[in-house]
Length: 168
Image 1 (cartoon, rainbow, N blue to C red):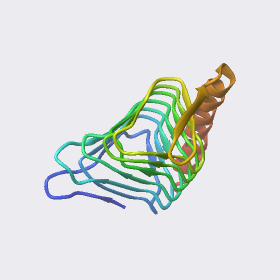
Image 2 (image 1 turned 135 degrees about the vertical axis):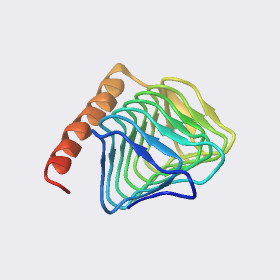
Image 3 (image 1 turned 120 degrees about the vertical axis):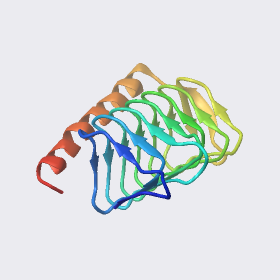
């Protein structure tokens, strides 16, 4: 369901796919080839919009809420992720069930492990592999991880196109 909130209406690129079972409301910009899967909530009810770049996938059960949140290109947000921070850099992956809290940033090509919690007011630098509660940097992301993260994003662009072509 795509809904306006007052005079703020989501702007969704024609190539993007938003499941009819997702809830997208407010001042949101969704870029090319993005996918918003069933059970996702994206709520932009603050003073600043949520901006989602190109080739981003937000998987089942995730919640995205923010005031000025920017999600750059080729980002994967896994199943049941809570996104409440300020910035996610290009090529990053947020693993299933992780949490990303207020006034925090995640750099480019970062991998946030499943179930990790990035606490409020935390800045994760580019190319970081983060695990645990609270989330801590365990190592730099490897070239193999970076390639796999990009491959995941590209795979979901293709998968979403099939859903879109089939009217789902």
